[in-house]
Amino acid sequence: MNLFAKTVFAVATLALPAVALADDPPAGSAVDPNAGMPMPPPDGGDGQNPAVAPMPPNEPAPATKSGKGASTIGGDLAFVLPLGDYADGTNFALGAFGRFEFGVSNELDVTVRVGYLWHKTDTDGLSLGMIPILVGGSFKIGGGGFVYGEAGFNNVRVSFDSGGLSGSDSETYLSLGAGGGYAAGKVKARVGLWMPGRPKDSNDGHTTLYGVLASVGFDFASL
Image (cartoon, rainbow, N blue to C red; front, side):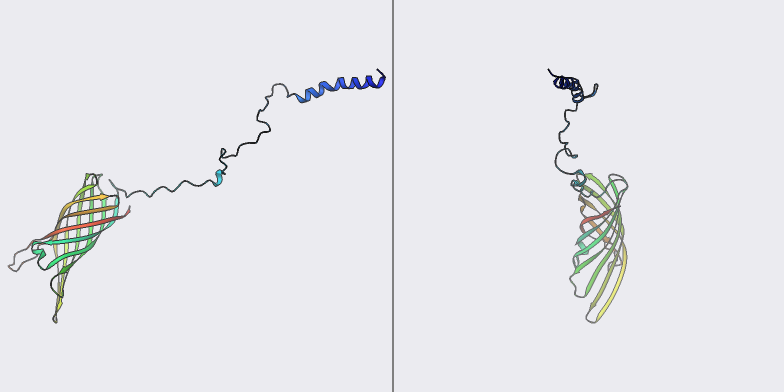
């Protein structure tokens, strides 16, 4: 072996350990087995960016509040079937009520109803209308059913215009009512016996008027 070959061999012998040390990880360090592998997307792999992911659907609107401390505003469409003396000359009545309810307890509600009732009469030119103002309560009996009672005042307005004769009169009477009903969500239906008043008769006595009052209503808002 000549001098040049001896020099190359010596350099190679010194360089190989340095290369081996450079390729090995330093002592005490762990090797990452996932090094060089692509990282999963930040959303967990479904391919969607969480910043623009679809929002969950809107929750349904809450049902009308009920029970102790709940206040409800609603309206009722009403139908009256006159009976007895009330039916003399009057076929039926149609009208509407505004209604306010307040929950005294989970079973008992205080109610206030104010409305107007238009009457269909048999006499041409005769107009009969009533404005009842009723305060009462309804008691829940389970399964959506309830019983109710009302008392208040009923303003009766009569006017006549026929054959060149005209006139009008207005009287206010004590009014009472009681019956039962059913509530399903925001819808309430009730039917009961109603006494619109006790006007004087032709013998200076009093005649008790009564009929069947039915209504179907809807709760517009809860306070």
